[in-house]
Picture: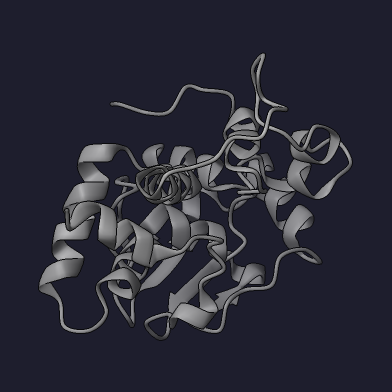
Length: 209
């Protein structure tokens, strides 16, 4: 399965802002962008003027890195977003947010999206009582996500719950029950509820050329 293998901290430094790709580490002084707030590489500290295309490309790359999605799948999501009614950019973000790995992360059942992907692939979660091991599975309103019974008492989930009990807030479009290691999708997220630091209209312009 194709995946990103580049160091996550280099991705954040290249984009010039935190994308929270390493979970709890991103909230500490160890965060690379806190210590070195410039692009990686020999010429990283030099200011560069960006063309219109360059800005559009950077926004797309930022969104892909944020959700851990590669180009072919990202383009499919954009095509799906274009077919739906409403604003294409918002539709795209709503599709990305509905991915099972992202929902698991948003519910506080993983400390990062990368960890969420791995846990889903290893079959630790059920959706409406059925095991789902596909990180890109698109959840719907009403879906109930739960750590499967055989995994509930594993050490990894004890550590995750402990780390997230007083950590990230759960967005309003989700309903979390960390005590039972479960959650539910209660609504479609609005653009205001999606904390992705990206200008999605630039992505739409890029793919519309």
